[in-house]
Image 1 (cartoon, rainbow, N blue to C red):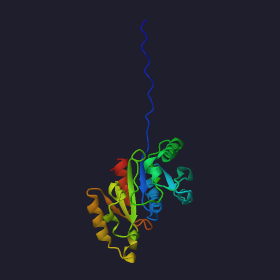
Image 2: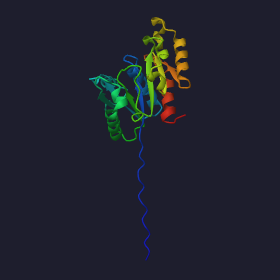
Image 3: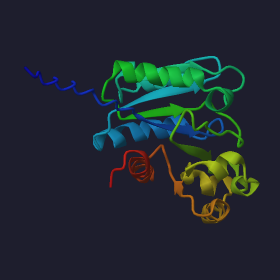
Image 4: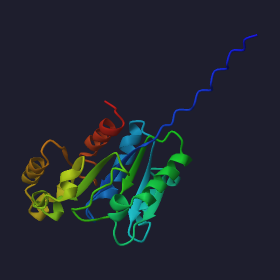
Length: 216
């Protein structure tokens, strides 16, 4: 008598959330941008969570938890110490572990946002940590920032120039700054935003969806 082998049980497909980074100098508006991106992405049906990095506090994480924009359990905090770029670039182990923890807690998670602690124009993300990353600068820092050609400005997947509303108050030629940013970045995109009012944030959300969630 021939006994047919039983079919092997189907293995569950492993789905890993896309991981993006948001970095930039202190005060450039990273957390404010995330506060605007959360509802914009949720409106597109994106299941997301956030990992924040700060020097020796969890202030950015607590700000997001209190915002009412996202389930507080979906926000993890990493204390980066005196070198915030280290934990997103040289040794991102702490951030990877925080992201893994959120994926375990929330099966079906589609997107993880890693916010770097405020750093300088040389700050970049390890591609072991993120699939795609945004660098945020602001007009109050000066319209010469793109000309300085910092690695963050040049290497990021999307450069965001924030606080566009301040340009006339700080003597910045905004069109010139945007043109210079486009020139030094070549074919890589540049977005202009005012995170306080939400201006330009929808375009950033669209860019994220196209780049890592493959949404039209």
